[in-house]
Image (cartoon, rainbow, N blue to C red; front, side):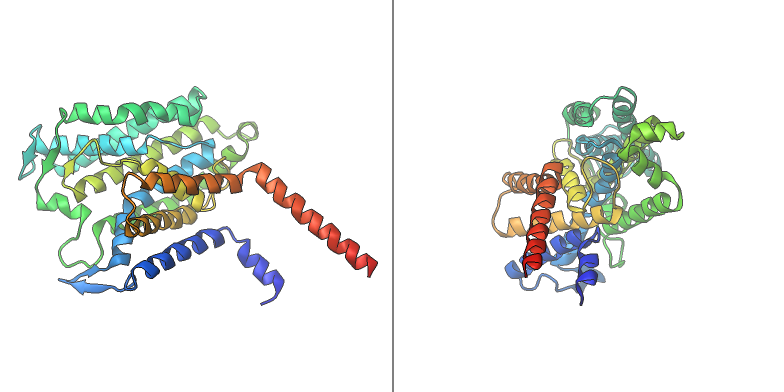
Length: 353
């Protein structure tokens, strides 16, 4: 392979995300030799790798919304975990009819899911209004719901953990009959396909990138940058609602204190690992999806190394810092200067010879 082909491969946007994913998977193999072993039990797939893919489903859904928000506004939505809790609380409260635990639906599941998505859309619209219309810095604007969101979820459920002990509700977080693929994975795949088709088959993806690169120039050419930013936060809220529904189905309850806990940082990390600039602009949806699976695989590695759940954010924060530094203009300028110096020295040596 010549240097030009190698340079083309290594400079591809998805090269580093894929390398990171492979590296983390290999670490899992070193810790668990049968990591890639997949078996079929009672007609469904089982295995460590299946568990990683399954457990990453909510994160994949969140990462898509976080990617759009980051690309358009150059900031992150740190309230997605709390919005998940709000959506789960609304859904379970309607299904339970206000009771703490039920064995059958008190109201239609369709109405409950729609209400949950509307509640999460309202949360996303609130964030979008603060960021797009009032020009509040995204991290500060979303800090409001990050702080108050779980309290709102507690108010909805009267401070109780609402249990929905109905089989048809639990299947959204597990398996459907003998269908081999877990339902959370199916839902994540559907969300990714819908998002990809909308962004690639319409001009929305291009509009988001344009606004993220230069909002002023976008307005001058006729784009409504305020509406586009607002729309990305609205979409992010809805996707957080979908993730909250899936997370609630896994544990067949609405636990306002734990659903979506710390997932906002994982979503941001997935976006960064996917090769997306945290300052906004061009984005890669598939890169963020790969980043989400990398984070889940990393979590599995850390658990395998007996790292407690309380200590996990520390290790993930280190990864975030490294990625942010690598993406910073100062670091990029430093690398460019060093590369130029090496080129100059090589040219001088060549001239001397």
